[in-house]
Image (tube, rainbow over all chains, first blue to last red; front, side, top):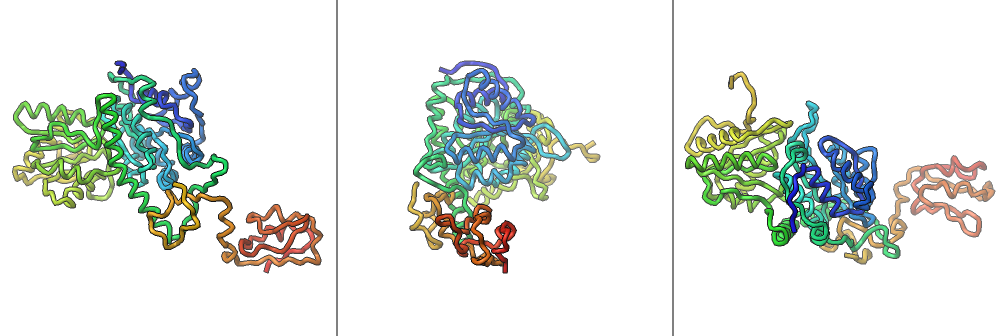
Length: 397
Length: 97
């Protein structure tokens, strides 16, 4: 039975790690994810779990050790943020291409510079093409729930890909919220034991992992990796359905909040979804049909499903908590319109950048964006793309 | 998932390749002839060789076969011509050409 508690996002994930009790966890501390390995170390020191914790000298090493341990046959995971993820870059691709179901709990933090420790999605968005499944949490409950679901997704034989479970730095990781915790036995049963079919420490059944491949093989291998990513969508939905059946909550690819009859939809990820929902509620009271599409799974990108969900509204705001420095909008702002176009949907889209490096995104900010959507749908001419929400400019003063 | 890799070749369709190109067999480097990468070639002078065997263990590719306590000529299918053996030989019995 679920138990009510109050926890920060980091505490919630550390609690889930204790319940899953993975075989190996190499980690290096970095703000704002430091508490996760710290709390896990405490659990281990207190004899509450027996994970082999490896205090490594860098994130390059933590992901290397996770890759090595996973290849050896151990259920492996690590935690990091920001520059730590950047330092893992090379190994992120190695984990995915070697088809190793490593789990990474990421606490989103901006990348330098300017050097800053607060939340945006530039770290995980930079890693969007590394072949990792990416799942984002709105709150502590989802950070806990998503982490538990990561292992059955990653380890499914149709997938065998690593999973990055993302939560917003400080906003989610450090703020204490009410949470429902599940029984250890229920979590263990849901996650199951890890019994890989092939692994290095398997006497009498030799394998080589990550061999050099000439051009005649590499392209086929990369296609097979992409095919696994495509298949993972069904697995993510199945695992979410199983989780909902067992624990009574959660979404699969995204949450549609009051989208059914919405004229104006804000597509957003992570903790700011809460403000967007509040703004939608307030606008609904004024008769404005506002809704929020909270994207949970960014990789694989649910292009067809998003296009279908946005096909009936008048205008969509696509919200990026990340800049791509391409003069054309952040990652979501590029991929969502592409998804609409490729599926023949002609819904009007306005792109926004918000909340960089921990800048607050408030309910009134969200309401302002909904107001612009209404203007745009009504033929407003002053709509600018790629606008920064809350940016100070001389023009604005 | 375990596949007989001897059935896989450079014309195999993607569905027939192993996951992550894992290789389900041991010692497969024997079949991969890397000797053609060689620029310099070691030449073994049997007359000068005292069979001290200092060369065999330093070869990074294991290309100096030793049988019954005596080294034999180089395995040119896998020798990449690095020249470490020449440096290790105290008797000038290995010359790079």
